[in-house]
Image 1 (cartoon, rainbow, N blue to C red):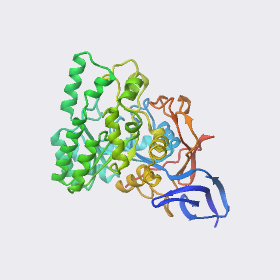
Image 2: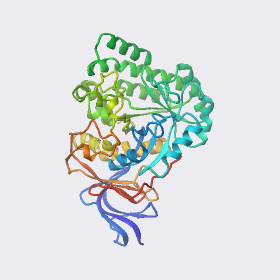
Image 3: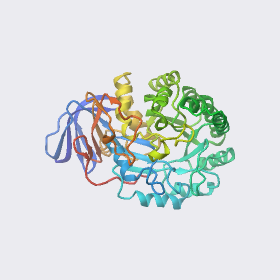
Length: 451
């Protein structure tokens, strides 16, 4: 049989182990997996000495188009994702203007995304005060899930995202349960964090550690527990985003054992950086929840290695440099640009340095999110699945420089970091979209996904 592409000689990562096999791709699908495939194809990719992994599915990405395209656009954001080994992503309902809280806003975003994405993409809807009547229409339009903030958010600009109150959270969960939808939650107790921040600023304490102290672990755990109580009462399915503490992980797992349908993610930066790095790097590393102290970070690492965290995301949340530079830690924009380095940094830290089984790593970056959000034909290397594949050289070390970045605003908390492996090629539905020598390849061919 003649294939469009054959990937030969790589160490292919499956759910049950790593095997040195060839992969035949035809009509954008994985058509054959065998010990040896004859080179009857238009293109042969030599993967010798490299791992062949399912492309990452990043379910936590903020693209600020339309409305704040100077922060990040679909073309630049998806280029960075492709360069990092990501082949699909789900885009959050903020920070674009207007935020994706009704069908009209969703259509504006879909129109803006057309013909600009180098990888496949889908969208979330938002839950905010006053939009419960919009939830069904957004569901019918094909959003993958919904997102809300149990934490302060919003600029006051018309159309910007806002946090929920407890009534909106409770009523929203009831409606989403009826729609069989998942609610993704940013969980921090806003009453406590806001007052602690006000007190710090009043005292003139605006350094990195002051910011960390204003958002203690207990504020994450309490918000998680409150949402879990509402979920148990309403039957709403939950997913907690960017969990930063082991105590919050345990609270979520306890609720799961008690019958709540709930999953959780954490992010690369919580494992790669801690509060010491925030103090050194400055506001470019500000995020919420904040980077934790080293002792807390080690507890989170243990939770990850013990299999307690369902998957990994970037929470790529870019902005322009002026929103970061020359400001104290409370005034600076809270968000980290990081989607280009999810795979390589976490492979280095988790697989190479901490001996995480590579099959588990593949599930963390692709298999579990694809299953949870019912992302069709994605998440694993298997016959009939989309040929979404990344090649990673485990022995090619490099230092990240600004010139390597594809973001619209070329700064990253990882600039200057030496990473002990490298993504060498990213393949979307059988088409090479990134190559380490050539960079981003071809024209945007990303497709809109629906669950």
